[in-house]
Amino acid sequence: MKPGIADEISVRLRQLGDPEKARFLQRFFKTGPGEYAEGDRFIGLKVPQVRLLLREYRNLTPTDVLPLLASPIHEERLFALIALVRCFEKGDQPTREQVYTLYLANTSRINNWDLVDISAPQIVGGFLLDRDSAPLDLLAQSASLWERRIAIIATFTFIRRNRFEETLRIARQLLNDREDLIHKAAGWMLREVGKREQTVEEAFLREHCLIMPRTMLRYAIEKFPEEKRQMYLKGKC
Image (cartoon, rainbow, N blue to C red):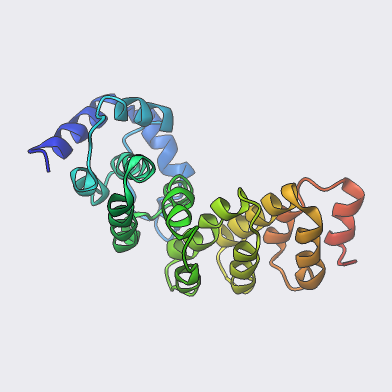
């Protein structure tokens, strides 16, 4: 690890922060008592700002950014995850395995939907693409909301390669999930399946639309023609 590199990046990020944006983000990402991101702290940065700063640090290693992943500051964890994605995509096989292992060992810090969505497809989906995808099932069965979201969002990588079985399998496991953020994620991934092969999505919907959470169904059929949307919403599967 480069001495002090994580501290240096932390200082740079905080210098770029905007208190007014931070207050907005605190509300937007539901950080209040009893909300899904209770206690998360923001300094007021958007993703493009974080990516722009990362360009200045071209040779970061996974261990360089690990302290940032442990930070209480949301944007520092965001920086760490975007850096880990870069390490994974540019790395050799040992580096990819290291990033994947570090990622799954730190899921308690990947604790908001944007953090999951910006990293799970590339790291978890990317690593499992040519391997046994059973780790997705373990994540889908986790007590952690964020690990369950990682499970379904990671399948986006499979979808992009016209492989749908993983998404359908994990979506089935999440049909009875109680969390709205999971319903949205599963519906989104089903919609992505439908963009590539609508008959596959509709086969899933015909089997499950009467028991699917309403939010999951709405997200899944969002791009359907209105007449077909209404058919599914009225339970005429």
